[in-house]
Length: 177
Image (cartoon, rainbow, N blue to C red; front, side, top):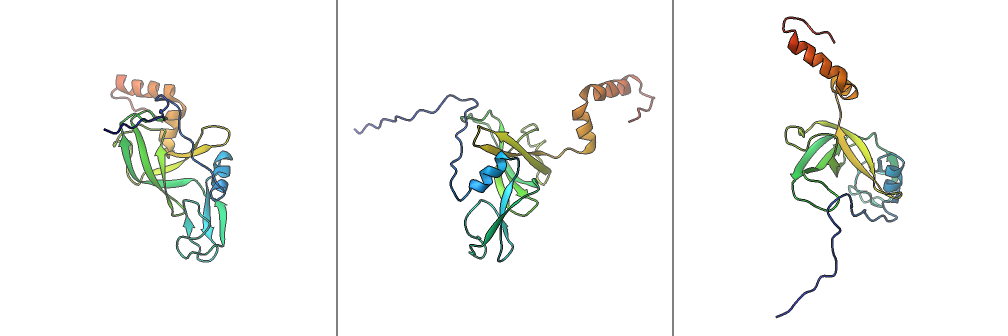
């Protein structure tokens, strides 16, 4: 009987994430994330915006491409909630596909909200949220775009709690905003 020995050992579950490899084809992308920009490529021949980075246009195969800073907004196109522990991730977490405002779709993680189907609504607006792994790699993650009301609640939860409690104790009184 043949015996196979494995010498590779996974690090313990926790904050360790295997960093992506960077090469000349996508260096502009990782330089951008480190500087707080989401950089995409546009074909100079046909105008197609695309991701992931590559030295030619996937639509027309032209090699004349330019790099530009995207606005960092998009919509949640698809996702799956992963519940098993994996190095670098605390379950549950969303593995998502975000459709960027410029057109391309990218695989990412959703952060800043509960990782539940109730919180992760398809087509909900999302915005870029960068997470620094180390001095070289900053990951582009996405978080839900808060409505002005939700942003105010998140900015001042104590005032919001006081207002809610006041409305519960004074059933006939109208609470002003």
